[in-house]
Amino acid sequence: MGISREGRHKRRETGGRRSKYRKKRKFEMGRPAAMTKIGEKRVHPVRCRGGNMKFRALRLDTGNFSWGTEVCTRKVRVLDVTYNASNNELVRTKTLVKGAIVLIDAHPFKEWYESHYGLKIGLKKSAPSATDDASKKSERVQRKIAARQKDRSLEQPLDHQFASGRLLAKVTSRPGQCGRCDGVVLEGPELAFYQKMMARK
Image (tube, rainbow, N blue to C red; front, side, top):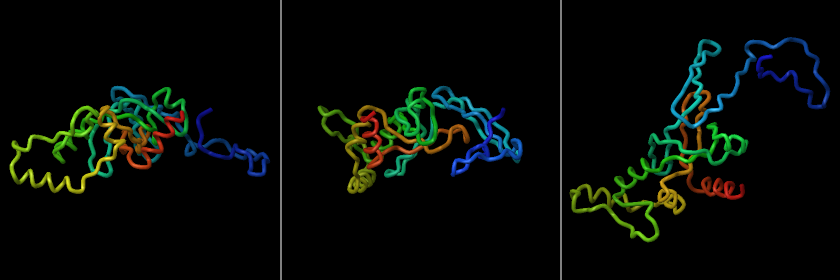
C-alpha cells in the first residue's frame, strides 16, 4: 500500500471507528521522507501534482546562513547536527530537517566582521584584543570604521563560538522539499535556550 495523507483511517474524537467508504486517492498521496544527510550535494527533482517540481535533497554540505543582528548572509559549510527537538534519532543519524540545530563553519562570518569593524574577534583569553593595522588604511576608511565601532556589540557566547571556529545555527528551509539547507545563526535568548537543552541532554 502506498503512503497516504488522508485522515479517514483514524478513529473519531470520541473513540468510535469510522466506516471505510472509499479507497485511497492519488491526490491524497504522500512520499517517503528524504532523510537528507551531510555529504557532497545530491538533489533529485520530483514531478508533483499540477506539473510542479520539488527538489529532494539526499545529501547537502553547504547552505546560506544569515546572521540577523549584523544583517550578514554567507554561504558556509554544514559540519554537524547537534540537536533536534522532535527526535534524537535524527541527531544520531545526522539528518538535516527544518528546525534542526547544526554546527556551521564560522570563518566566512568572522572574516566579514573583522573587515567591517576593523578588529579581531574570537581570540583566546591569553591573546590581547588586537585591531587591524590602522596605518595601512586611508583616513576616510579609518573614520568609517570608527563610526561603525560606536554602536558595535558582540555577545560573549558568540565570541566564544568564533574562537572555536564553529557557530550554532538553525535550519529554516526544508531540504527535502526545496533542495536547500538555509538557516539563521543562533544568538541571544534563542542561543541560550538551545545551549541549555543540549547541556541537559
